[in-house]
Image (cartoon, rainbow, N blue to C red; front, top):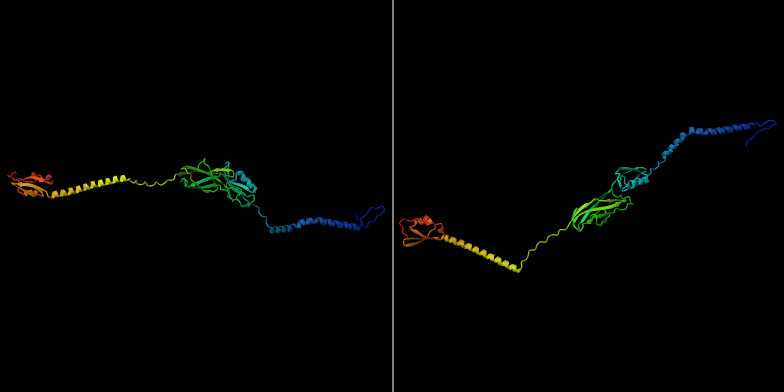
Length: 330
């Protein structure tokens, strides 16, 4: 409502503002002008000072912490499952190699599961076919002897992934026989009781992926028992008696032959030493020992009548004895 001060009314004349009223209006106009010009001055003069204050405050205030996340276990996950697990962990997949075969899984993960990395970082991994390998020692054994087996699983099961059940292997000596379960990578098995050549193999299921190992050929031989020594047969009493008689008879025969040989040698030596030649000179007979036929040359002999002993084979009267002419013949 307008205020009217010092106003007068005259008949026949309108309202005229007084001096006080005009002064008040001028003061109100100046206040309005000051209020309008203040924001413009603040925008031109004060902002530099306010910006310096804001910069000083930002330097003293700590920077915001980097958000990190844990790398999940990717081994044995199929191709699509690995991508989904990384997406939920706010990470990006980076496949280094992929065989593009059905049934492939993550076989290599350089970044260990459980490592903290910044969110939306790239995680590298390799996709390929898993491998189950079986080794045995020795490759040749005997029945009921132990054979040591070693299993190598590629990729290995991750110990960080507690949701993954332990691996259980099924072992058979050859296809078609009952299988035995093994939970260790190294185990011993007793060789079969039947000799022959066996093709051992193991199989397992990891993350719904069925795997079968290579065949390992093992030769099982029978146990060779040592041959007992052949006993010497003991002769019966009758055989012993016959054997004794035969030995005794043989000894008698050999002894007889030995005695005869010795006697023959002695007799021969005696005959040679005492050889005699019987000669006659006229009416008288002379007995003389002749060691050599040449000794007859010095004797006055007429003829040799006979020679006794072994010398007659080597002596010839015609050659060894000289006859005198005109000798009498007795």
